[in-house]
Length: 216
Image (cartoon, rainbow, N blue to C red):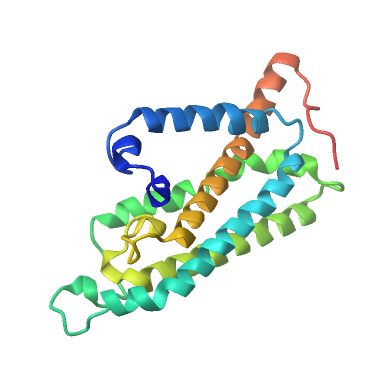
């Protein structure tokens, strides 16, 4: 992303390359200045505004992918080509299935956050909890399916693991660079949210009290 704004790759290093001083400093500064302070918040509900920002960031990414999809599709979709990657592949089973399956399983490891979320509800009960879970899963599925389909029908068999990491058709694709920044925001916000169950468990082990959060 920094390369799009004129920072040399000699400084930043390649995305899939070995660690560089720039990458280390970036990780340390982000952790100390953003993730750590957010992890110290007393209530998970304090992240609600950041969660809205995350949804806006994902929505912006989807819009950028949709706008750029026709141009990418014209370049990569070639029915007359002998390369199967230039065709639409509706179904395929190979060794990459296991990598995809592991990502799917990992995406459902958020069950540790159920109890902290339950404790934040004004009137906690099973019906309200299931409503929150159902709506969250619906929004997640909607966004990820839309981004996945849009990304695939843009570059087809050349689609990278991370759709926004595709090779750009433009010299400076600032819209996609902003999208990369938006995805970074989503990841940064999700880190403190996953920290709350761990923090509550440590508090209970040490103090034998389970009253960290105040209900909102």
